[in-house]
Image 1 (tube, one colour):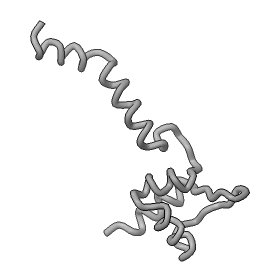
Image 2 (spheres, helix red, strand yellow; image 1 turned 180 degrees about the vertical axis):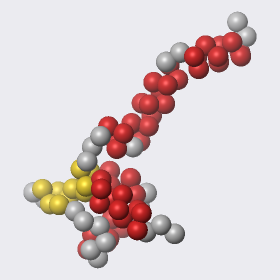
Image 3 (cartoon, one colour; image 1 turned 30 degrees about the vertical axis):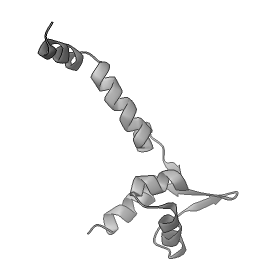
Length: 87
């Protein structure tokens, strides 16, 4: 079996699709259907640091909810922030 046949077999199987799905779900939790994010996940989703995220919250640019000592961010608010702050 040559290299092209092996690649074709991998592409035709579910191996590649399953691996791509696993990587995407690990990097972007939105794929899993979450609607509320921790500050770590929200910052990652927006591609900013947690410090910048907290600055935006203090400035009233991003809405958040407090659950005990933790801040949680709704995906709709994060998407709205992204849309309104495109360059």
